[in-house]
Length: 214
Length: 320
Ligand SMILES: Nc1ncnc2c1ncn2[C@@H]1O[C@H](COP(=O)(O)OP(=O)(O)O)[C@@H](O)[C@H]1O
Ligand SMILES: [Mg+2]
Image (cartoon, rainbow over all chains, first blue to last red; front, top):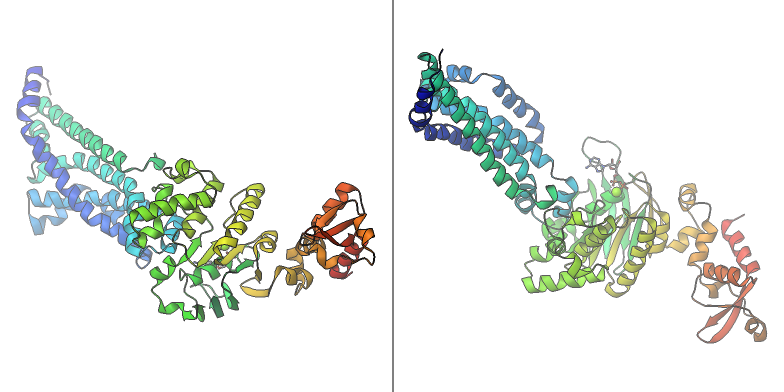
């Protein structure tokens, strides 16, 4: 495979950029869905009534993550076929675990005596959750979302294989046509997207972290 | 007034009761101290009074009302609670921590601010220095003071205090105890006070409940406990210096001799006040290298207290 600088410049500034937004979508949509699922699940699994299921549910999530994304797509293929939707579903399943795990860890990390004091002062269960548990666990939850975002940014490249578009399309075009420049450009953009998401989410995380935890 | 009737708690997945058929009552304005070794069920008793723990059987009444008939959140807002591990909210300022219950009770904001400042002063913290800080910026002793201020905030008639001065060194503890007793003279709360330190119990309690392994071993005034310990467990808890401890609770006037001729008393080299403890008389005797002190009420000399009398008294109560 040879490398021509001029083609690389074209790949960087002409071929790849149209895929940036597509790729961002492939990351942010699964991330949003995964958060919407994993966060409430994590909250439920730390409530007294459901705590005993937390080991089993986390086991399922853990197993989910050991399955390669392509295998997930293969499993859903008979129901959903190829394209955007199965890609989003596979990526969502993939993004669940770090968020659920960190939600559990974050909520479990809220000191018992603080929750106890809150209840003892007469805060209701809901007030304790909203005013104590959420703010004190949010930094840890955010860092789970960040891990998921970075993970998904990379995995989302595979979406192109099932017609799910994204920056993967550029990379696979490069592989198919033996064009090193396209592969490199696609990879660089994926790296930049991951970096960008990491920075933005780190900033939000820092804003949410109370000063005593820094 | 707080009444417990045959209250028992067996925690799930355990067989031995943490609290076993305890019955007692605490009168309005009194401090009742629960004392006993760690794990004997003191915290569990407090937590049943504010319904953080539900009894397995038995009844608890506050001012005659069964607490099970009161909404538990509302009940807790009427009961001040100082928890063993302090448990300040780490993401809230001291002002917000102390103002917690008044805010739950929807007091006007201005009244909350004023109350917080007043309370910080009461517990010996500089309001302008402390109010805006976060808990991690305070020392252990300061945090415990904030914990007490938070429990007092909405002026609850009842206070549950779980080893409130446990996390500080003995010197600070002594000072906090003194300050609290002085405060209690003014506020006259009904207080359940938990400690594993018998000296603290004797100092703080109008009434003491000695516990062991979930069972009530003895209840009575500090004087009753010291002079008639129910069994060896109570004796061991009090320690070998029972007689000396008693001297701390005995007023000089109760042991003094009333001399036939007042000149004897007037010739004493040193004097103490009638209501001061006998222990103080010993201190004064030692300082003045004397075997006798005069006892005064106001300006009048009313008797003498001698080393021989004190010694006889110690032998009498030690029973040997
Ligand atoms: N939530 C709980 N579940 C099970 N056992 C408990 C619980 N809370 C306390 N216990 C047990 O009950 C006993 C009394 O505990 P506690 O009231 O905290 O004692 P103390 O405050 O006197 O040290 C201990 O044996 C303790 O292990
Ligand atoms: Mg305890």
